[in-house]
Image (cartoon, rainbow, N blue to C red):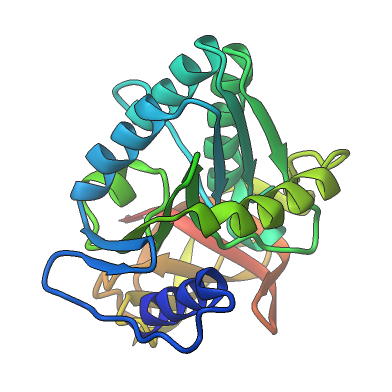
Amino acid sequence: MRYIFTIILFTVFLLSGCEKENSIAFHNERSTHSHITLEPIYSQDYKNKALDLINGAQKYVYVWMFEIANYREGPNPLLSALCRARKRGVDVKVLVEGGEDFLGERFYKKQKSAYEFLKSCGVKVRFDRKGRTTHVKMLLADTSLLIGSTNWTYYGLERNTELNVLIKSSQTEKFKELFLKSYRDARKNTLNVPKNARKITVKGVVTYVQERVSRRGRAYTIFKIKSKRRTYRVFIRGHHHIRKGERLLVKGIFYKVKKVGNRTFHNEIEASYIRRI
């Protein structure tokens, strides 16, 4: 919640410009301040609001996003809307995270699939450079800015609890300038394929196990498994009630070196499947 509140305050600061002498009044549904309109957009309302903005755009649609992906059962409706906007002559540009090693192969595959889908219909897509993580979630359609916490994925659009703000103002031109500068800087960047990651299947005995909860309240388990050749450190989301001495089959992505924030892990498996044997 503090993250979203910071976004709103920063956005209002940029849009307010020289109007510092005026105060901003917030009402239940909508707030208006010198031609600046703010509207909270909650969870699944985001998808319909974003579709309205894209479908109604006349000049440009710019998307600056951490994660984009098609649904398992078919195209992401927002990506399809971008294709339709491009076909009717709107300037459509997309800038997304290029995939750092710590994000893993699964992230890379989703980004690549969405990238190819958009490119196939003529949408201009670029990736940020390696070593910089783009964590923005922004849609700018003409003078309407939709910004907040929602990624363009199935869970982001259909399942998660998310909070965003829709801002309508001629002052959103400032965000257009920020986006285009970053988009130009990303001209030669490509999707970063994890170089030190590979699929792996391991059978062995658990020698250490600890169930933990992250600061964001997400459960995960760390354990070590000893196979015939070596001992691996394993990370898996959720609590699986693993016991020391159990024999397990583990499938996942093996990282010789894995960086998460300021921490570095060696010889770790990010498991997607485990089974007792």
